[in-house]
Length: 134
Image 1 (cartoon, one colour):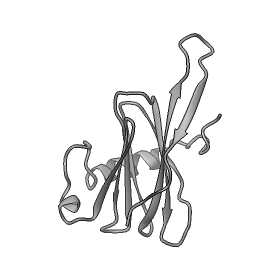
Image 2: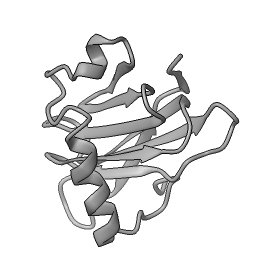
Image 3: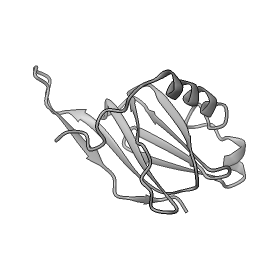
């Protein structure tokens, strides 16, 4: 099964957003940001894929894939009006964040793993149920 979100284009603009986002959203999943202490940040996990959502000022979404089962992770966010946002995708050992317009209502987290060791290596994507942020 292919990743349901397709390939996410990587551009210099997206990199700029990620760098800017990491100043507001925690760079490490274990550390709490100022927003987290205010009750605006929610943390979610799906295997070794970790996601933070911060609705204090619009919808910041941060994803990190640590060591573990999944070699790639993705998160699909939906805002309060039901609009599906552009998904975030990241490789193992990396993180990325973006700020969406409007608050995030729910997310769906996916992880991709290899099913074998010999080439060609088949892979499979597993996804969580819809997780509500509010």
